[in-house]
Image 1 (cartoon, rainbow, N blue to C red):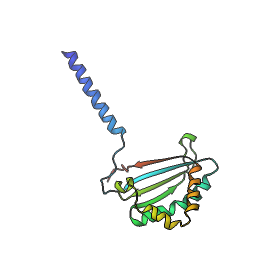
Image 2: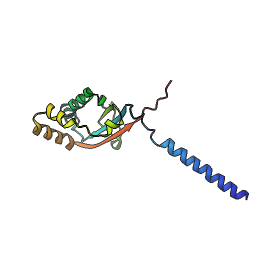
Image 3: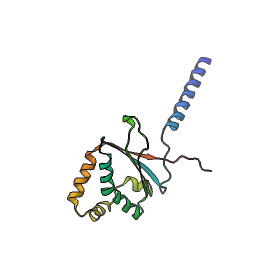
Image 4: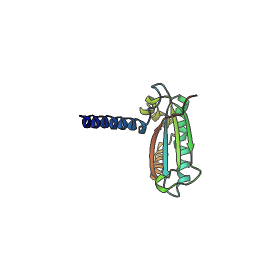
Length: 153
C-alpha cells in the first residue's frame, strides 16, 4: 500500500512539474484583443547584397508601411541592423519591428493594401520587378510575434 502511494505521489508530482514546465517554456500570450500586437520580421540577405536589399526595401516597402501607420492600422515601424556579427546560422541583417493596433489587424489581410501600392507605385511593372529582386537576394526570412513581459511597477 505504501509503495502504491509513493508511486501515485511521484506520478502526481511529475505531472505537476511537466505542466508547470510547459507553461514556463511556452510564449506568454500578447495583451488583450484591443491591445497593441508586436511582430519582429527578420531578413537574412545573401552575402554581398545587404545594401541592395536595404535600398529596395526603403524604396518599395517602407513607404507602404509608413502609409499603413498613417491609417492607424499600425502604430509604429522600426528598422534595425545588428552592430556586430553572429554565427552564420544565427545571422540576420535587418529586423523590422511593427507594432500593430491589435492582433486582429496583425493577422488579417489589409483590404486597402493593393490600392495603396498602386497609388504609391503607378509603374507597377517596375515595382513588381524590384520586389521580385528584393526577394531573390534573400537567404532567409522569418516573422516572430513578441510579448513584452517587463514587470509593471
